[in-house]
Amino acid sequence: MQNQLQVQNLKNEIKQLENLFEISKSILSLSKGEFGRDSYTFRNNNYRTGYITEYLDYNKLSVKKTFHYLSIIRSSPVVKNNVVYFGSNSSYIHAVDCDTLEEIWRYKTYKEVMSIPAVDDDFVYVGSFDTFFYCIYAINGILKWKFKTDDWIYSSPLIVNDKVIFGSMDGTIYALNKYSGKLLWKVNTENWIISSPAYFEGTIIIGTRDKRILAIDINTGNIKWEIYTLAPIHATPSIYKYYI
Image 1: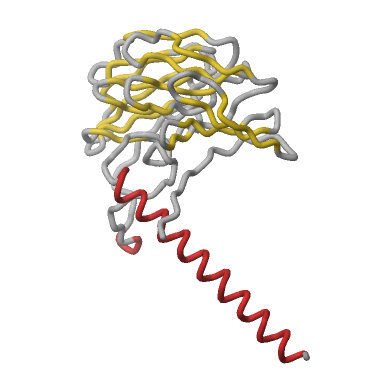
Image 2: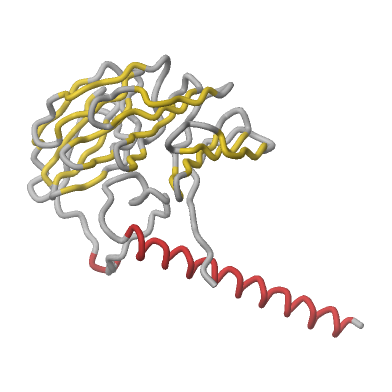
């Protein structure tokens, strides 16, 4: 009897490993197939998988140069056309040359910038704790437009076609026209939005601090479905598609 239980447990473990392998394979396939190009956004693509196709030899990594600034930097960098963009707690959005680490420009907001920028076409999109969401020309740091919310913005933006989507700690998920900053739709919740949105087949997926995972129609802002959880969600969703 004991031997039968051991054999059954071993079979279960092997089955779990096989399932994990298949899921991992599907994530890599999805990332390479649909978002293999540089997307210049948090976690590399709109599925938020964080996967990149380049191979890194970790044994050869070293510090080439450093960029020193007087304040804390909590905003992760994104890179496009050899320029790295990020925010700082000194209330600035920075653009720095990747080769020389010389600062190309900086844009002053009125509070900390902890949101991670997204770069699309010729513009940088990012939110600030000053309650504004900014669209800035990537080449020179000049403001194109800004949009006012009612609280800090920690969520990192998602750009899909002509829309830019993000959450605010005023409890609202916003969709703006990325060219004009015009409000297209918004979804109100009962607590902060810290999670960053992910995208899959016409649907925005995001977590909330009112203990839900929301699926929102990207065109209308209507909630397609929601799942209630046992605690607030700060984490950003990651999307995979299972291939058989």
